[in-house]
Image 1 (cartoon, helix red, strand yellow):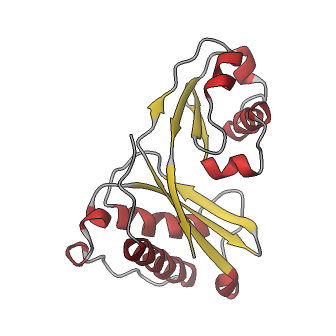
Image 2 (cartoon, rainbow, N blue to C red; image 1 turned 45 degrees about the horizontal axis):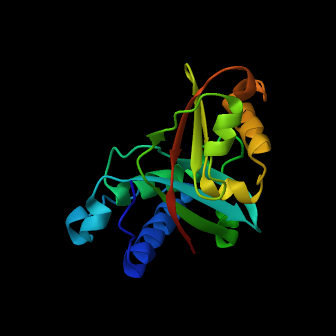
Image 3 (tube, rainbow, N blue to C red; image 1 turned 120 degrees about the horizontal axis):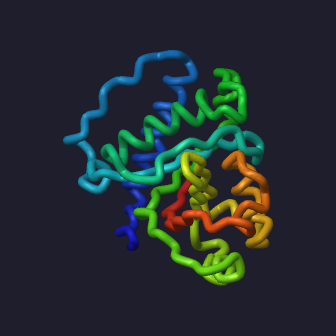
Length: 190
């Protein structure tokens, strides 16, 4: 399933909303309610997003949702704050860091189950650089956005790291059939 791409104006507005939310959240200010009626229809529709924060080219936080449960504009605001303050891998972003923080937004398509028969078949069905991948094993779950392929272009290594992120042995995908979902993203940044 593909998404109708956002216009440059809609992308710009989402980045502005993310920046306002990030700065308010980091400074401990209350974020004013969003006037949904003033937004373009695409930003009022339910949407799933990930917001990635970088500082000097290095990851500083990344939080998001895999499935839509609120208007896209609200989703982006919520995840901008969460990426700054609630990514367990990093200490909370400090106000002094704000000028150096860059925001990237990834708008997700709905996840699709990826059916496969063996580890080799799984590798053959993945589309590096195109698909975001979610691995699910019972209550364990982890995802990598398609952009992660840039750092981990080798599919077996990509899956090893995804198992590790999930809290499982790196080779779990080779030893056990996991639930696998794929999705694509529309990515844009400041």
